[in-house]
Amino acid sequence: MNLDRLVAGLDIGSAKTTAIIAEVVGDLPRHPSVNILGVGQARTTGMRRGVVADIEETMRCINKALADAEQIAGARVDSVFCGIAGEHVQAVTSKGIASVTGAEISRSDVERANAVARAQPIAQDRELIHAIPQEYTVDKNLGIRDPIGMIGTRLETEMYLVTIGSSPAMNLRKSVERAGYRVQELVLEPLAAALSVLTEDEKELGVALVEVGAGTTDLAVFHEGKIRHLGTIGYGGNNVSSDIVHGLGVTQTDAERLKEAYGCAYEPMVQHGEIIRLPSTVAQGDRQIPRELLAHIIHQRTSEIYELAVRDIEEAGFLKRLAAGVVVTGGVGAMPGMAELASEVFGIGARIGMPGEFLGGLADSVQAPRYATAVGLVQYAAGRVAQGAISGKGKRLSMSDAAPTFAGLAGRVKTYLQDFF
Image (cartoon, rainbow, N blue to C red; front, top):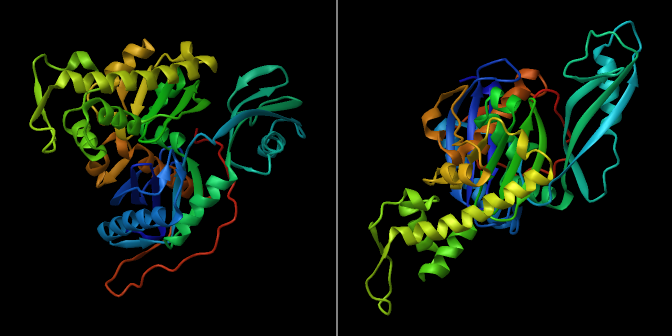
């Protein structure tokens, strides 16, 4: 284990907090290989719809998840790449123009054009986290991906700027720092998930990533190899559970158990006549229902979530550009029938997205949709290490290690992404 190449990803979802510690073993910036060394999970109690609602509760979840991951890895980290999502996320396209200074376009020309595009005014209550170059124009030649070395006099860039609410970002950082860690960078969760579950061919042809979490459903549309649209639907797995509570007269905890044990998102997949026993109280007595009834409740709510996603993507103008179909991931993505229902609602092919490529070590332990974001975060971090933008750092865990000390509030980190998305 090379302690100088350790990275950590932290996904604080509305239901689960997941931490992954990995060692960077490859040097390709776009697809660096990582060895998964440690995985930790904790039940989240301080988040609501992707936003911190209780700093102390969130801090405790972070502490447990990272402590478990460190114990398995046998190493301690002091900083993490942390995912962020929610309805406060916004994205705009910005253009920048620069004159070519030499006989051919140089990297400095590209950087000047990108800097102009990135210099768009940002509201005081917002924070820029990603500035992603999408394509370039040299004189009147459109759709150029890499203009360096080309001949021309005028270079124009189109850049995708992703901003988040300053308040949610500050509360998230504060929660991580109270747990004794530093936020190396904030990374938008659907972009991180895309790194771990989408193929290059899918992103080239056109694909919609639908990440169904507990509190929200996050969308990311890729076309011609670049991110084109981001969206958030304010519904997720918790809404499905609430419908089960009201429809079957069970507690929230029992609804989650029923969903996990017998849930199916696509009603036609359930065998007719299958019976399941419901948890019951003395007053309710012994209760049984057809499994089809549970599937019907889940099907209806999940279909509504998908329909909202379709509307969002259609309004953005990309519904007919999804030649590679839909990839469903996130904690709810493991439920049977999620891909089949997505295919029916979207009217195109769909699959479940799970991490798997460029992973070693404990890779088997993260091959599930709920790990998509956390794995994407360590792969993103590995890319930054491979680029030389950062250096990973860790230390071996020993019995005499003291508890981590609290760090001061980190400054704003504005990430400049040339090749990741």
